[in-house]
Image (cartoon, rainbow, N blue to C red; front, top):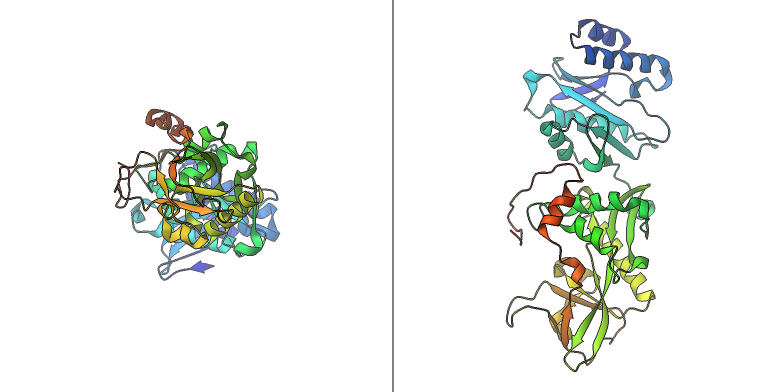
Length: 361
């Protein structure tokens, strides 16, 4: 049994499931309950993974039920849940889902829990997102699929490696989740990375993903570009990003670990400096400074305008000594809004919100 101050969940007994089957009027639900009963009987050693779970108020009032749809080798457990209509809108679904994945994550072999919702069931999708699930970017038999990863020790369970072609769509969805409604309503970064992979300036050796217990949780990329120096020289440099971490793991050190690893690899390849747009509060911890302090100006920025977003880090000490000039953003970063909208239709629908702090309308 798992419980909060308001509710409890527990695997139903055989007798409870038989009563539920006999009383159920909906044919689809009766069939589903029957499958739960059959699964629990055929897996007595792990019946909790197959049985119906009761959702009750602490006074014993039944308010819904849930299930895990098994725990077969090679796949993540999947949560299914429902709250009786009389108890909708009271937060019981979120409490029950949290208890369910907390129970699942007590088992050492469980690294993630999945769920699937009807495409039109926005309330259920909000419950999952509120509980830390994120869209997987794929559609199952019933609709969009969601996943929540177990929180584990970052140092012992993460790997940073080069992205594989078969992971492109998963990484694009990761970027979409990371940037959605952050800088603008919706985002364009998932389409930007889709375009940049085919750009001649893209550095394939520095196209990194971060993986935790076999699941992708972050990514970073680099592009070649130049500084057009005031004395006529063209100085090769790198720019970076988008760099993203899945929302539920942000502000926990994963982004810095990925960033520092990426910068070290760029240094090993002999690149001299990285310039890009970012927040000094975060990137300053990895050695970035305002680009103005290196004598580098941002292209198309009027004199006297705020340039605090424009950052620089020398990978080779002294690489920019004696250099002043204008940094050029690779053209691949400039994408058409209509193309972004068309590409975004390939992913599960998400609500665009105008939020405080966004810098683009």
